[in-house]
Image (cartoon, rainbow, N blue to C red; front, side, top):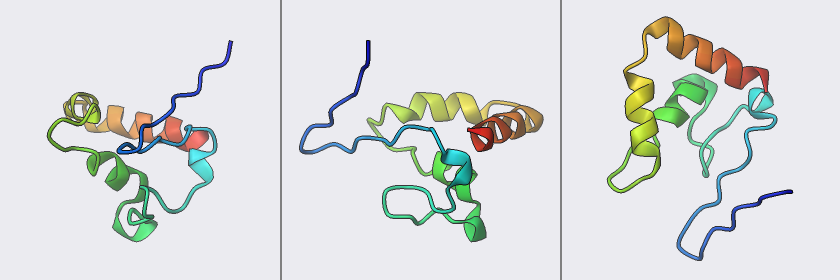
Length: 78
């Protein structure tokens, strides 16, 4: 069974992670680039009041640096 989340008119639908390792620009407007941290910058920019991502970001920020790097390496492998 396939599931495709549908965003409402006031929401963004996040793109699937497939191919994230080949992307250069991140976020909806492309403002996270290799020059300013790329993927890590995109992860950090998802923090905001009421965001579903805030809990995940809190957990990510509590990881040891080597664990964060492992996560980034995994995402880049997709």
